[in-house]
Structure formats: C-alpha cells, structure tokens
Figure 1: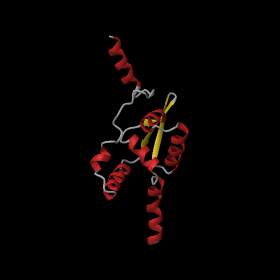
Figure 2 (figure 1 turned 135 degrees about the horizontal axis):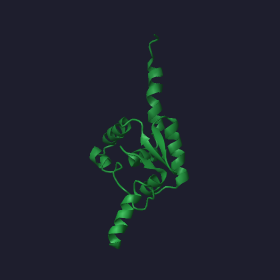
Figure 3 (figure 1 turned 90 degrees about the vertical axis):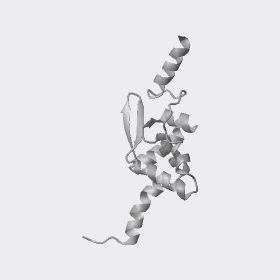
Figure 4 (figure 1 turned 180 degrees about the vertical axis):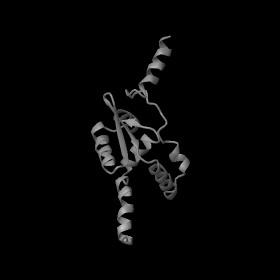
Length: 132
C-alpha cells in the first residue's frame, strides 16, 4: 500500500472545507441543522430566492454533504454527517464567536410563512385556535 504524502492528504482534507467555505452554504447548513428542511423552509429562514438556494443545495449535494428525499411535491434536505455542524461550531470558536451563539441559530424553528408539511401543521393549529 502506497503511503500518502502531505500534499495528497491536504487535497483530500480540503475538499469538504472548500464545499462549505462560503457564508451562504454555512447559513444553509445552519438552517438545516440536525433536522431537515425543504427549499421553501430555507427561503423563509434565510430570506433568499429559491433559485439562489437551489444552486447552493446542488453544490452541497454534489460534494456529498447533503442527502435529499422526496415527499409529495417537497424535497427535504438533511446533512449526511452531523460532523459538519461540529466543524462550524469549531470555526465559531476560531472566529472569536461563542459556540453557544451559533448553536442558538441552528434550525429548531417552525416558520409560519413556510408552506411545507413540517411548518404548515403549526400554522393550521394556530389558525384553528384563533377561529375557536
């Protein structure tokens, strides 16, 4: 078996870092968090256009960072490996941010303006309570 050289190892190590290097992709990973999110959820959470988000999702899928599943007309995205969130939290520390401040924004929310089945039931139940 051939011993790997430092340049070979560094190229392999850089691949996932390059894939998530942009602030937009890190934002998407934070918005997805430990759960899953559809594009409409990401649109609501981030305030970006669907086409812009889809370009970044495609790159993250191509880099084998995200996996997707279809449920009706919705496609849900999730991290293949939660270690990416740990890497982002470590990056927060290196950037002078507290990991708690970053952890606080990792997706745990339901967005009433989002129409996906994960958020819509909350909207429906809130509207039901108002009507009652």
